[in-house]
Image 1 (spheres, rainbow, N blue to C red):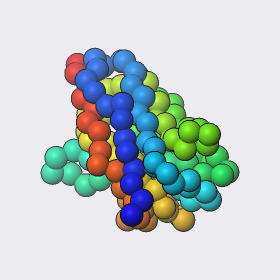
Image 2: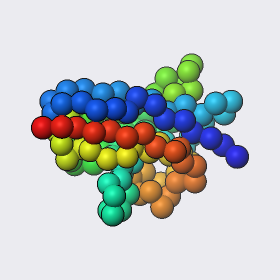
Image 3: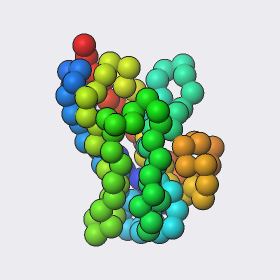
Image 4: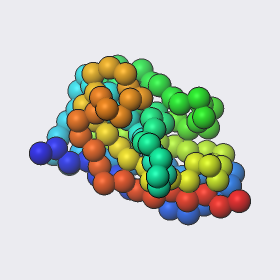
Length: 123
């Protein structure tokens, strides 16, 4: 069973930054999409950003374009989500996922998930 481990969540004031990290210990992804998703209580999980491992193509939700950046460090087997200019509406549990072949912002396309890390943005 492939595991994904997220870190970097926390509490921040509006306008501030956070960086989330996602690592798959002992496993190297290649030629698949890895993505970040978020979910608020009582709401559906939504795609935030995704990156194609091995190619570098990226997708972003309209709500985060220009503020969030997804990147990969192959040497560390890690995917990052740099979140800048955070807003209170960004508050959610953030999840890392891997294993999609297409529709990179659709959570139904992903096979492997982490446990999530909470991001709270106060106004």
